[in-house]
Length: 221
Length: 179
Image (cartoon, rainbow over all chains, first blue to last red; front, top):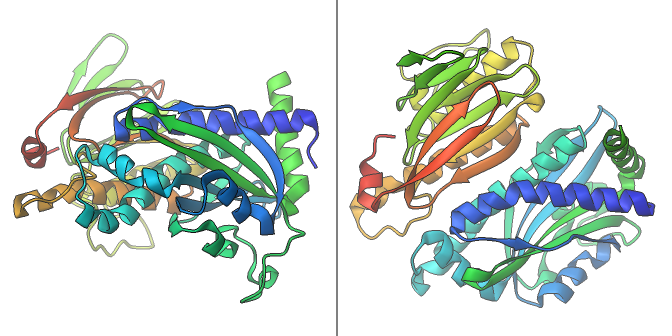
């Protein structure tokens, strides 16, 4: 769908976007964060949950935020940004965020609220920069928390698919293809690792290619 | 309070105050659980900064215009809406603004006793700012929130640059900081 130059450009855009957002998390946990070169692959909608399971195993904690990059009334790109962690790193990350050990009895209580707040700031900042680099307007949705087996995650709403595309109780249509961007990050001092993902719906293929081409042209100028 | 320097003014922003300006200024403020939202238009080089103490309050804002209340600057929601209206009246759409968010100390804290309940105000201030940023479709380009520390900010309205220095405080000092 994307040629080699366009793939490199979208990876670079994602890299710059997350680079803007990472200090937000770094300040909150008061530790240095390392992040790694971005990866890209094309993934059918019905395989997205499998890619998460393959990456992080069957127990994950994630915050996802749907967004639209709006170019004109009729041209937009729909996507989902995800902060993804193995369930096992939640407790040390909570301790880092609170600056003290969060008692086991309180962990469940504070986990959802805390990670939703953190995910909101991190993902919204990342998507804001993505939107600015692609010279679009931004419509971000409220972040949503999920903890459990990724195969049990009701992924339809997270992908912002139109209800008519996912009739109640039916499977995600496999023909819908997503650009699946990923950057892995680590907080060595807290022994925490995770990933940030951006999934872009390729139903808006023309808009994606045009936005990337504009970004490339701006850089060449 | 403002001090004249050769090429720009130095403005000290106290809790509950806000600044909007079209000429270069250096705006100073100190934050605890309060939240400062910084808005900057890179092309016109215009900037605004708030220092809200509390998240929001019920208000019947008229549809026909902008009502300026006595305690407007105290609230994150009122001050942010006012600053945005100022830009909108200048013909600047929200999507062209760079937004930065600071403060909200003790956003994450374990309440051990009733005295610490008030600390959650930092979290509510940040959430309120984020709700408006999202609703107004603004671009948030940087933030430094939470943590058990205060923050000293200097915002250069001519460049959009914000210098931030952390101030280490104890939990109770932060809870009692008016900013």
